[in-house]
Image (tube, rainbow over all chains, first blue to last red; front, side, top):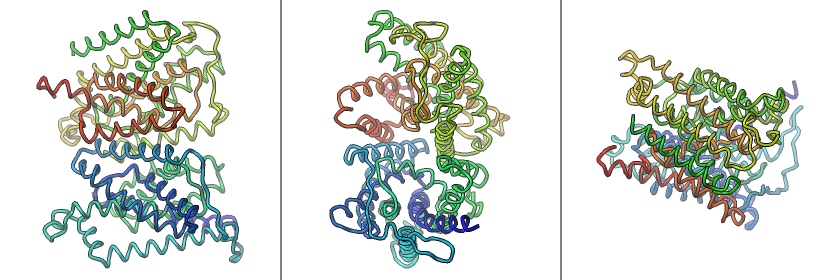
Length: 288
Length: 318
């Protein structure tokens, strides 16, 4: 029983971070209508930015994550202007392969630039744990979770209370109508893609605080990210956050009954089943 | 259709000729073999990816099933790969039908995502099921000297006729499908699924059939690959990048849905791969895939219909 509670608590905290990683993917789909296969690679780049910020500026990865956001936001917006914009109206095949091509390019650029080794950060609180009732709460998980909650709150404020947030949501709902109301949708597309990839990068920085980064970090998270987003309903920001928590819990509960190397298999199976039976997401309403 | 068969025959003859002329244990003939394998793999993908427009990113699943079935049957029961080959093909076709149950209604990127996840799931299972597959350290095909019966030879030269055979079978299958009843139905589904259904096409059955044929032929290519390299492990044969995405890249580079597409794609990709790995790999790991990624992006942005369209467009055909 305590083992289950412990797994649920760990799952909740990791899941909150998954939510931040995945919300970017959901945002990109919701606004641009593009399924970005390369999203996890932007997260990987964010992890590297946070690592370098820790190594050379001495910043805690949770703080460095802000730099990850800024750097990848710029890169994402640039990629959208130069590449994604050209295939906005292309058939799905072109969209799939452009983003798959991006995935390969980003992963191997990281390999060329940073080498294959795994990099980790050291923080003072990494090995500490709090005892809350019968369960242990790792301080790095807890601080990562708190950071994730703050980011989610910030995103909510931006999307609901600012002009740019309203413009993004208007473009997602109806680009034509948004244009008529004076929104330059092409600019909004670039901002939304930057914001989406930047958020995943930010999540990556948070993940780095308790994990490691290597050029293949992206491929470890790609299916996880898509599972979270499909669970919550593609394009739904709230859904992605809730989906993240659910996936985090499933993942940590599955380690109780399954060997660790099969942990991802549970995820893949759930993912395929979800796509087949509830493609609108468990939380979304059947809109199509 | 005659033209297509002529192209296949011409390519097959050139390959056989090269196989006969080139030094049988040399490097050049090895490249010829790799091109034939790559063209076959791309053509298998082309059957579903090109004709039905279902962008599979999980063909490594079938490739790996083919490679592992024949290899493990040989290791455990001494069965010749010639017997393992059809068993693997049947197995892959069966798996493809089972996979269709959850995926056949999915469209566009959703189908790609599901197949990508399926390929990865297969890799995880193959890595974890040590008793069945030998686990992550991989298995070697036992070598017992040159033998047609066991489909294994010293040096690449002797493989040329075998791979030409595979290439011809896969390409003829594609041609027959493309020009036959099933091909028209697949294309009808591609253009408009609802309209196809209304005109009385059993869209479900057609998709299942196309997918199963593609899967079986991919498995055959996997068996041939294992016989050629003598070593397989889950990360090689179930690889999302170097099998699944590469299969699609070969077809897309040449031209999706055309017979010549995967042939042209393989003729460009394989020599490029070899050049890059010969001159650059030692200095910089990752440069070859990086360039493929750039090619993929370039093709999608500047020439979505592939290299073949450079020729066909000039003649006023599309």
